[in-house]
Image (tube, rainbow, N blue to C red):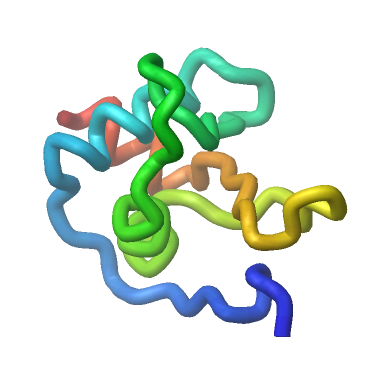
Amino acid sequence: MDVLTQVESTHAGKPTGAQIKWLEKGLAQAGGKLPLFDEDGQKISVRTVNSCLKQGWVEPWFNNPIKPDWLVCKLTDSGRQIITKS
């Protein structure tokens, strides 16, 4: 089973500080693409990514054929709304 088929959506809650910081990065990117790494070169926490996926704030963009375990995400409309309201 690939990463894209492992994602399930639930109802949206309130984002944490780490989630807000990551989600805000997508506002300035084409298509709402979110980074895999932070400004210090550290990989974004899997916990942060998975919780945002479950909340419906992001969605998988595509499978990365070179690194199939890396999940490339983009903001959803509800993700944009939660960030612009925060």
